[in-house]
Length: 213
Image (cartoon, rainbow, N blue to C red; front, side, top):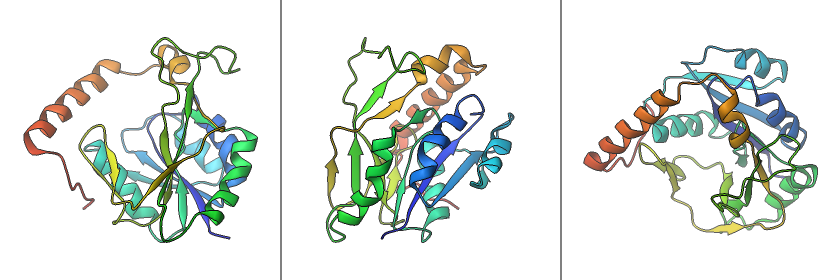
């Protein structure tokens, strides 16, 4: 059976990362987490308690940060599943992952997308529907073949280089950003300024072909 790992990027996620790890770790072989070196909370301690592989890296822009993760995990598995810290998957979703990668044609499909639901509460009783995002497909199951499959753009990064993508219906990624955002101590003004700066820089440079050092 192909080896499947979990891989993600984090910064100050102590409020939610345990929920994510509890949902995904039973269904993958290992977890690799790249931590933004600006992190100041207990994220690292939590990751260590779960046995995750951890590496710190400097954030410069979203595309380069993501490619640094992909370079690090290159060769460590056949596929990776990129569940974020404020997301979870259900039991049936998790059970589907390994059989799915075993069935995929190795000469054709490189990326698999799943619908994502946004929740106002952790119990998933109230779905956020104001902006009608659903199905909001997220391409998170990816063949581990860097640098052929890599990210472009400084902001709103996008995976390129794949031969084909498919979408799987019926199993959702659960996203809790709507719930967590007003409850955590985070400098949203700083984040908005960062997005603005990177967006302007991307307009000038194109923002493509962003490689790790």
